[in-house]
Length: 423
Image (cartoon, rainbow, N blue to C red; front, side, top):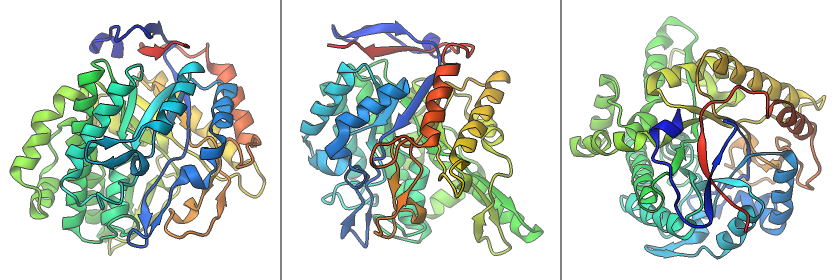
């Protein structure tokens, strides 16, 4: 499917067109980096999870798992030093090793935070500055094909400008719409900039897929609004007209007609380079009360049902780009969740929906995600394939078995990639 739609071709002496079996088994290096306490504290998960000291060891674990791809990228707050001033020294070292090991990176360029000198996602200069940065990365690393320019655009805007947890820590609709338009514009401009240097680039939009349920009749209008709102970032990113309620919401809160038409004009030409990456956790379905306040609903529909809705809306190939779960008191809940997610993927593929990959995120345990990084407690979340001492967890062993068992069995979906050849 994808190779018929995309202009794949040689891009340099060190890249080769390599046929792929059609499914990417992936993991990721957790590199969230929002600020909290009004910018006083940077939550750099690469540092907190020990990656800066153990990155070679981590890459070896990825290889041992048998993963085809790794979600990883340079930290924006340390690499983007100023407008047009990009420090890729650490990226040069780590990406050279990925290339040597023939690990395919899905490059994560902005994961929840911006450099201090930019401020936050309210800054209207951010999109152009970020696009220049993304283009420069693509120029310096021409062998890289897969990108997630801005990770989870919807969650970035919600947590920063609606819930007030991160970065600008605002709670009003105008700030929220400003964050949305700046974040999605940054993603669109970054895709365009990357394509100038890598015309066959593929963009895997890692986005949180959500569903909202009404617990009583008075909650129905709230659920309808939220179920329309959840599509805002992807609608704009793919140049799809939003529904009338969302159009009024955007314009009432500061988006101009010109800004809205930018997305309708510029985004459709980029859509053919996109894979709809979607993230799924136990917390992605919400139960709303009569006042519109929500709580986690657990799985009501589940991954495959909600993904089916998103695929019907955008008609794009899908990649499952994030999931995890704590081990639980018996140590086996994460493993059960892994197989539950996998069964949903197989079901979608049987129905003809092109699901091109699966990701357990992340490689190692994480820090303070139980409270969404809002408080700096140092709590270890046992959600990784490996613990922070790099010992395999049960889910890590299970994922390795899953990859070994299914790698050559899955019916192929057509996917050709330009992949790095070992030096």
